[in-house]
Length: 408
Image 1 (cartoon, one colour):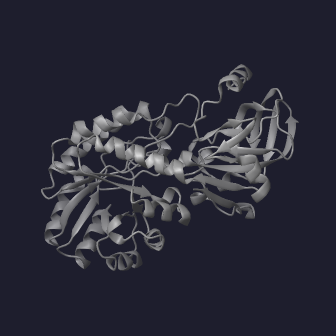
Image 2 (image 1 turned 90 degrees about the vertical axis):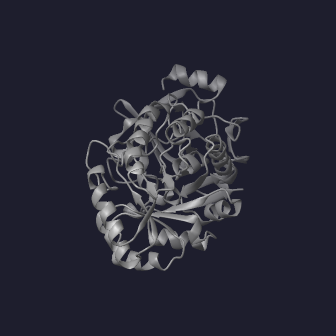
Image 3 (image 1 turned 30 degrees about the horizontal axis):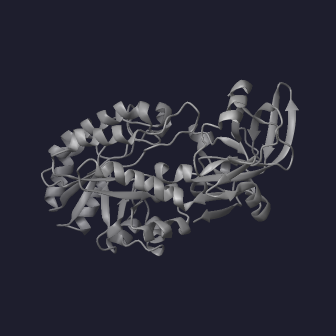
């Protein structure tokens, strides 16, 4: 964004502005709360989540899926954010089940009120200890992602129902980023490929295992421009489904994204719904999805304090008291967290690079962004930090401490 764009935004509001996230009297409000006040009361770094925004995001998905005319389930991908208050809120809402990928996630979900029958488990490189735990959970919905795992399941649970995760050899992700694709051009560890399917069916038959469900998850953060590829993925999954006689459910995985920059448009759920209906309408199959990003990402942000403002050669650096270890996606996957001052000073815009407090070259939140001039001690919000941020954080450089607040 250049300075002219910043001046226009001052007049009409920033691209990310919405009814629950906007400036009022030059103060940034989120979910009805003044973020500058929260910084002063609680300190920083602090993650702030809106339970109401979470609920609205899920209700939007329910509305879209109900338009397909198909029976469906929504399983929230808890690896996006496992905050116990949020999980308890989700459980009490009755709007979602849980998508888990480890025994500890299953246990954590159960501690927040979810029962095994409301949990879909899709793990990879599952160990013997993992299996021992999983087999003790009645009615847990298990999806198998390899031939070896299918053999192990058959040996210990013959005659039971199970799902298999397939790999359609196509991937999708935010901004077509290959790092966000779980399948595609490169061979990945995830799922059973088409050429492995006959062997998978033979293993299932040998152990009298009923393959009741087909699951696939092919990438993260897709938006409208990726929908044609996502449609191709659904088409590529059909031969798998049609080859398995007992399939009654199809789990489409997650990956639905949210806008990260001014050039991104919100995912068109009407078009998304039509693609599902086009490929699966009239087939008598139950659908499921496992959203994480779409549910939590724009329902949270991280608050940081400015530690210095300094010109170094031709760049102005704004230092903050939190680093990429608190929210790795901007550095690892080029999924930016848009910076927004918690209070507008009225100062002329500057072009700045926002850097964290970790001794690594990766530790840059945003490069060459335009925002009102900041002073040491000012507070800054980094948006889209509700998902895959705190849940992926580390104590690198022993700077992993943060607070979390959930606004009802």
